[in-house]
Length: 62
Image (spheres, rainbow, N blue to C red):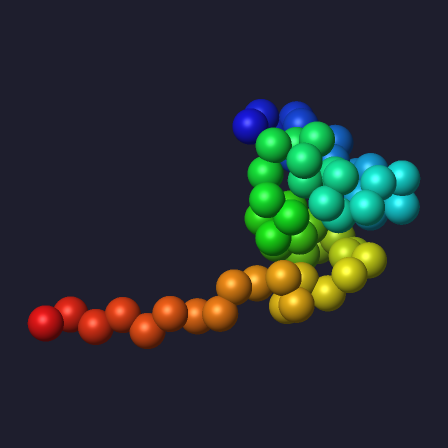
């Protein structure tokens, strides 16, 4: 995965050229990761990322 590919996919997703799944596939990342990147860099996601985030997992140290 290159930064250029992710940035390009983010731009194409944000302007509506590609849907989230297609943009993520083009960038070589998961849809969840692309959605988080869009939110992290102040972009507007056309779909809420909260719906695509996995459930938190409780981890305990023994």
